[in-house]
Image (cartoon, rainbow, N blue to C red; front, top):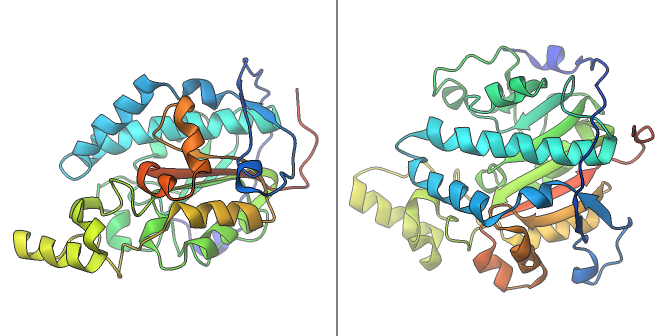
Length: 298
């Protein structure tokens, strides 16, 4: 495990070029929100991966989150490497080989092997030491630290990523700003989180979270004789899709995509409809690029 000082001195080796295949045309969400976009439309290959078959595979794996987390997170890890790799290639002309990926809220390191296979240097950041060692996985570069005050210098990493973490901290948008801070100019920030009013918002206390987070937590305790792992108001918070869209409008980074992670491409329009997106967008993704990077390598 690295301490904060060591983690702040990350050096990035040169990365290899990666020719990009054809990609789908994805309009940015800002125009749909009544905000002028800050960049032109781009073509992103990840949209071609967002098929109905992929959605079904991911959603089926959810039933193993508590009983077989390695199986659940293995599928999410593979999907995350595809997500980051596709967007990074489209925006920089490079693949993940030689990049440094900072995973904010990386837990015990379920994603480490997948990123290693892609050639990336993977650094998980996790505030809870018991969570870091929960699966018995040794990740040498792991750092203990808070997402709301990342123990890294400015412009330290190529990619800053967070998956299903924002709903577990009291100030997720402070974390999002920190993610932008530690990312190099020209690098990308990918934030993915569970929407509160979506079907998975209550985690193990759902679907009773629709009657209130506190009610769902008390009901779980009565039924199971113990507090839920994700306790509302302590380790689980109500984070709406609206807040993610608003952050995408105010961040200093250039936002390239806002979409529902587990939906097929043809359903990505749901993020444009206030109210409806709170119920039907189970997980919101924001993909942003930190301005000021070198010219794209083609």
